[in-house]
Image (cartoon, rainbow, N blue to C red; front, side, top):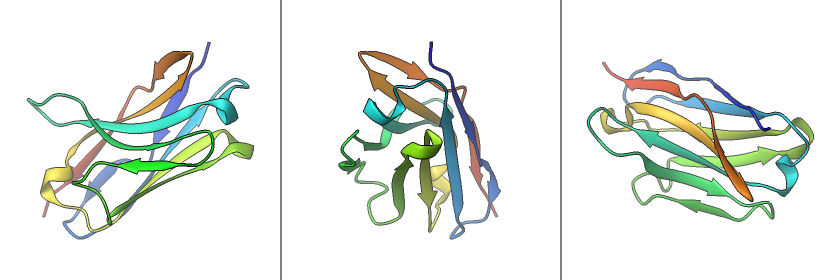
Amino acid sequence: QVQLVESGGGLVQPGGSLRLSCAASGSIFRLADMGWYRQAPGKQRELVATISSTFSTNYADSVKGRFTISRENAKNTVYLQMNSLKFEDTAVYYCHLRYSLAYWGQGTQVIVSS
């Protein structure tokens, strides 16, 4: 069983930055594809960014150039550095792990507000 614990969310002004972290339990982290998704109120959950076990990355068009996903296998942790935040980035951000099965974290709230 894999557990994912996100942290780093909070309230930030437009143009500001936040770094989200997701720590995974278990021994499969380095073999897994990791991702960040988000869900805004009244909207469907959407892909933000992914990073494969071979460190290949992919981003939603809406965050390209502003967000960076990275991973640190020695710490079983994936990060999402979010810069130049916009009002529309407000959402609950979820960590996702896929290795045969898929696992989700509990989510961390990001609010972009002045």
